[in-house]
Length: 78
Image 1 (cartoon, one colour):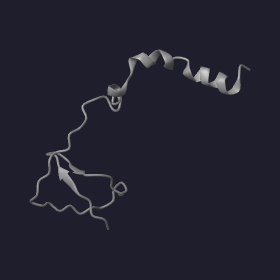
Image 2 (cartoon, rainbow, N blue to C red; image 1 turned 90 degrees about the vertical axis):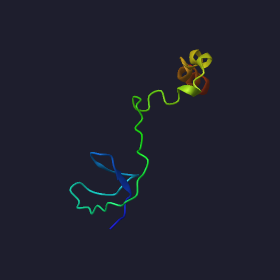
Image 3 (cartoon, rainbow, N blue to C red; image 1 turned 180 degrees about the vertical axis):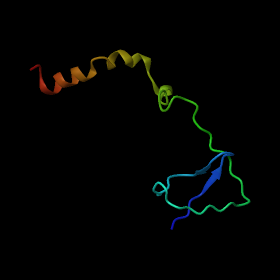
Image 4 (cartoon, rainbow, N blue to C red; image 1 turned 90 degrees about the horizontal axis):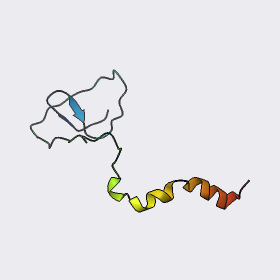
């Protein structure tokens, strides 16, 4: 048996963190009198653009063909 913390979002009971449960596995749910701050879902399109703040536009041109140049440097022009 394992203990898992979670919260009720108004529609579904959601665990906080990962759980080790199999589909159709029976669970026991205990409702406490404590409240948590709701988990905010990232409204972006997945992880796309998550590192945009670190992008350096001046290096973008160097990225084009970088793999090919590195392969020629390492292995020569075969």
